[in-house]
Amino acid sequence: MGEFVDKACALQDLVRSFADQNEQQRYLSAPLATAFSEAGLYRVAAPRDCFGSEQPPREQIGVIEALAYADGSAAWNVMIGIESFGLIAPAFSECRDLIESPDVILASSTAAVGQAVKVDGGYRVSGQWPFASGVHNAQIFGATVRVHDTPDGPAQGSNRYAILPVGDYEILDTWHTSGMRGSGSHDVKVDDVFVPEARLIAPLGGVEHASPLLNFPLGARLAYNKVGVAWGIARAAIDAFVELAQGKTPRFSNLKLRDRPGAHRAVAQAEVRLRGGKALVLQLLDEMWVRVQARSHITRQERALFQIACSDAVAGCIDLVDNLARTAGTTANQLGHPLERLLRDVRVVGQHTTVAPQHIEDGGRLLLGLPAQEMMLAGLPPEKD
Image (cartoon, rainbow, N blue to C red; front, side, top):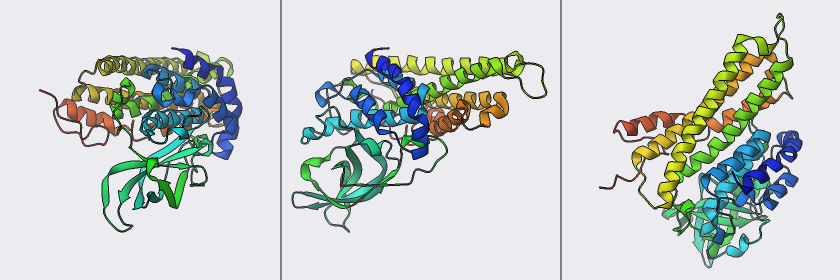
């Protein structure tokens, strides 16, 4: 790994020091966001001519994994920020001044589509967007909208992003969850706000760019960073279990946890499941990255295999953390023990639509020559002759 993974590792103690506060307030603490911004972590996926450092996929994943090892919520926050900046910044062609400062953090949401009504000089934007992770620390919010000529008229064209500065949107207190409580994935509401013409920009994947990162298949790119969060959490869970097993003697037993066959099996299976899933995803990722840089065609089968690998890797992380928590006994239920929070957090990763378990079956459909049905693989272009 490289420079930015090293920076993320150097921040792990700081991340841990704010984990409880993040959990209680349900959003990322400002000093952490500042530290991530100063280290350039939010911008590792953005092209260099868009004020980013244009790091390859492995480096992006490594940053996220290193932060998730310290706190899943903080890593999730940065992961969404990485995706937002990396995929949206290239569209800021007419409003580059908004993101020129390295201190600027961008939040966004594609989970809903608002309305942008055409008026003189711009648009009137309204809507409510859920899952806006990191918006408490952002200076800009990207709202997914469709353009209308009149408030009641039909939508014109495809989705676009309305770029709104702080003060033009309201953060609603909606993120009441058990897992990933500190990610700050609250709703954002916009009520009839004027957005200048130059600040209605192209959506994800809507800009052609020379950077190979912008030519990486969008669905695959959205999947691989989620896996990084799961890997970091899973590794933290294994380490927490090993530490617990050294000293705990379960009730009604004369054997320490480390001496029990169930613990041996649980930690062995966890290591193999984590390492095996990680090896496959990274192998397929490296192969795809070589093809992307050479502008070679990536087949439907390759896309299917990569999606299967990502969804299965996350499912494996959930299973291994769950098994370690069961084997740890009641200690894993106690508030304050790492396994309790790690189990809550890792389950949320698997609920994200980009790595949800149904994509495993859907990928299998493609491998058998059947059309995909789920959003991550459906609609892939036909194979080239």
